[in-house]
Figure 1: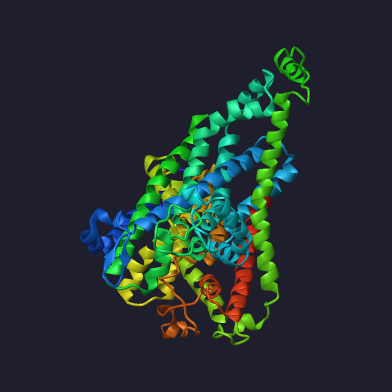
Figure 2 (figure 1 turned 135 degrees about the vertical axis):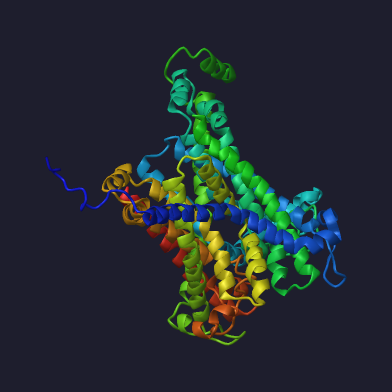
Length: 317
Length: 300
């Protein structure tokens, strides 16, 4: 009997070597790109670290505690900037945390019908889309004149507290802190909201069933259950606040001293880089690279912790 | 005894009805008010910023802005034509680098390495990369491009913005590819398509609209970024030379830098230009992000 299908002339279903080779090559190529994304992070550290080497050798860790930044004498220390970075970020966090969690609660625990809720969520997301430099120009011309009376009042009435011990001069650490709070609010609100929405509704219903009021439920059941996610959001906000550059540079006053008063002018690592980098040379560039490396490592630690916490929100329930 | 009454009400509450005056319910109502106040409080700066940018910017808006060079101090007129073009060029260069890069990486994460340990770690690194301060990325691009080429340039700015855009593009493209139904792939493979044909011919086209949304968001963010531009593209008071004469390799003005530079000077005319620039920049960024979100919402 002759075969029904003449296999000798039909196209082979087997792949040619070339086709298989190209196919595997494609997979490897995409893998290379994907791995390169991860390597980019290491490349940033190496590149910036390498350029910072001369300054690291010259100043060592003393760079972080020394407060003299003197391009003429070629002596550099970044304590005022490190201090300013931490202080402004903390002010931002202290303001943005309660407000952000408040919004997140307001937008997750059905206070509002969806039709009103969605536009508000969207509007708050828009806050994050406004470029930093726009907050800066708004800060210079609108917010500083607006907040100045408050600064004066604080200094006049509470000047005996070191926190308010200097007369405000327009730009200042507190202005930068408040504007940073506005800028990190959306991220804290968004992540907190994710965490709150992830709390199983059984917990809520059980609490209501026991006769708890809405806010007893929120404080005793929902917030504790969502606390790790909220903490993750706060950490992400903190990282964002520490690295934020333009708005801070434009409203902080860029003074080179660390003052205990938040009404004083100050600077951050980011604003130091923004102000000096383009015109620097020699050891100054290297010192700025060193400062950038410090900022990179600080935000890296905060971000890694934040990512770790946030990535566990979904695993938990 | 009012105090006793209140205590009795809240303590021996054997009724299922909540009294609106009991301390527990009062506290709850007050806290609801506080939460609402938080939401309003957060929206005030948004409207304040938009309001002032519009009010200030609109009065200086005219066609010349897009055709002329920035004026010297105290001279009327002028515009930010060079900065507008410069923004298009730097963001364009950044897109040319980061879109193919990001989409290729996303293809690996979504198609070939889904749910593997490696994909988990690459995603983790991508998220951490998106948290790296933009000024540090500027320093990186300075070390990588400016030091090597010896000049501030549009290319250096493009590289910095590309690094900044990359995490957004990788993340959104990965999500877009993962959302493509499994049936598409099975059908393609069943017909004898190779992996490369399945991915580039079937899965990728299906995901293109969602990928575009992510790309638009990334571009909107990059257009407004200033910190990575400070010492990569720097600024330029004049027009760049044409690209074929090396215009990409010289300092380049961008809108965001123009707003920064001219808002910190004492000259009224340059400040006005900064406000007009701020308006154009905000419009550019907000329209893009609103459009991007609107597109995704309608498709769902």
